[in-house]
Image (tube, rainbow, N blue to C red; front, side):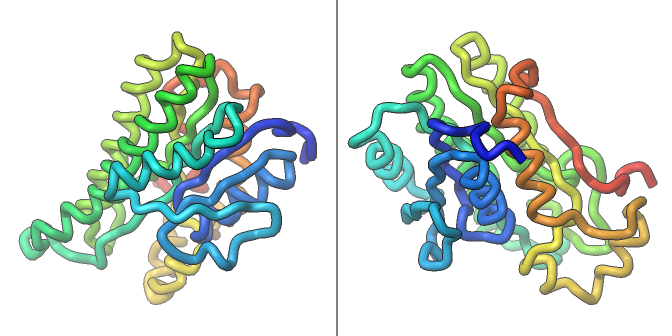
Length: 244
């Protein structure tokens, strides 16, 4: 690990208090970045060196306020990682309330739109930067089973399409936008479905889930100058799940 790779860089991480978000924050701090965790809760348990900002992804005003706060006393660009996300609890499409479908897309897609829009404006104004959106293998590579999660899958497919669209719009302005699509990751949320782990692992070639740290390493790569020729890419890391 290069402890100076991101020296002088600033990065905001939505969902930064969650399992994957915290791992991303820790990795970026370890490589020299100044990191801000944006979340609705859990900001009192952040890793050392990470500053927390309360953020309501459903509120454009909340997003604007956080961006304004980050630039209030420092004009350096703030890169973005959108790792906040939710999933419906195994609900069939024929039984799903519209409000539940809207809630999943509200966080997973609308939240990505709002944060990318607000942070992207500032990056364009400052000559460039990098954004990594956390999508999912569920968005394009597979349809998860036996659980039912049509809203989640739909939202993540849309995140990938959105990523490609803004990558084309903003690439000439020096803003690189890419997506990372993990498979199953060993997080507290995943532990709630322990009874399904054997079924899921059966189709993972390496017979294990990804660690949050492995996701964080891939995010760090996409943010880094090593990925400067990646524009609108979707980097799939699923342990071979989609090959079976």
